[in-house]
Image 1 (cartoon, rainbow over the protein chains, first blue to last red):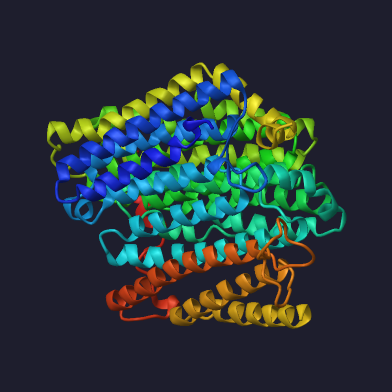
Image 2: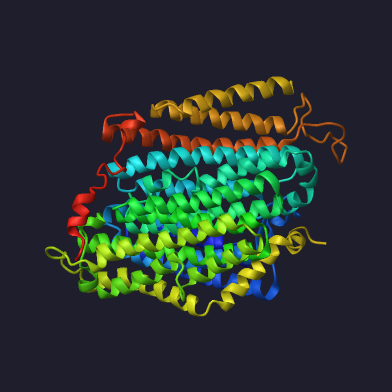
Length: 495
Length: 130
């Protein structure tokens, strides 16, 4: 059994429990949190290296042979996502040292944060559909508690919407699992992909596919199920919002890609049409929402939705090129969104307001912050040489190859509107002179803790944009394994 | 038997959707409870219904023979019940805390996280840089 595959779950679990034991010693808790996040980044890197050199890895829990027990599988897609989530997890853990107040720390921020990472990693690495449901619930309950941590009136209201819709989404996911099990008699994803043929031929495929689409679509904030996201993501403190925006929607989109490529490859007809329409509408309405917002974090929340549309577009083509673009886009979108929300938090901290109409003078007084904002913002708008450009370029190439002209046009227009949205933020908050004074500068060590992770994330994105080839070829291999499921099935079931 | 369970399951789903669309948050939570039970019943029925055939290997034999109840859906349902129990306890406390903070359980009136200020274009243009 490959121990490395258990570590993405065990490391955050142990860190969370150790932090719980040290709850009366905040300094120990903080050290544990950063240490656990660092180890997690190492595990993610090791996982990517192992997958790169040995191909898809699988481990049978408790040595139960494949279709009967729970299997953990790391293919290129999940390994890369675990590494990226380790990266942003570490950045947010450091940022949180300065940005999370003592009350929230005392009520278990560090514990919940690592349990959230455990749920996310578990959902990425599992090869069993019911186990995936369980990991979803683990990350949901951790995110619920993180969202209301602090008990602000605003947070409670955001949480009611978030919790309510997510419980409905879980019910839809569970119904789809129940139907699948009744029709095929298995829950192992690789085994399911082998035994789905009769279900698809019996015409039940689209019904189950739609239940999955609703379940994962709510979590990934796809049209028309995204209203909960801008109602809740701006309420918690910036580090929590950043990890939500960076990773939670990506778990939904990962599961959508995993389930559709394994269980419903090349659905064609109705299912594919629905996916493509959803992709276009998500992109367009997300950016429309962002254009009219004046609350900086709500504006960013709408941009999270818009970006999800691009990924679904890549999935909707069901070609290797489209999936490669989607995977590359997801991989760069995780740090982009995390950085943007962390910067949004800093903008609020520096100007003392969340309202863009009242901000100003940041370019003059905080040049470092302004420079760091450019990288994720223009990556989001798809400007070369930032990584978002390569993702969008590949997606558009895939669209042209499929002759999906309408969707290609929509994607281009949305790119332009995204540029308008981030340029508005730039013009209002950074370039415009500030009436009156900015709040006083934080102490130096606070500034290092909050600006440091942002600088590292932005630099990493910049380097990724200039030297995208290794990551892109990795994404291509990942996409090849998604379109040709042979190696995945063989790694899990053997033979 | 399957027919009865399917009809019950459909009725429960219909009732839960009706309640989920209420504006009263407490009714919404009751809708979630019924929805969870309807889904569990569906999984149970999808695992095929058998009566009085427990999956226990009789003494002296090595394998089960003939038709027997499938234990896996019951294990799945048990997991789902435990999870939904925890989540519902959290949701009830959340709705109660929200009620304590806002003095209302009408979802239309709970707008703490939605901004009330709309765009005032005139003010915006006045403040744009020259």
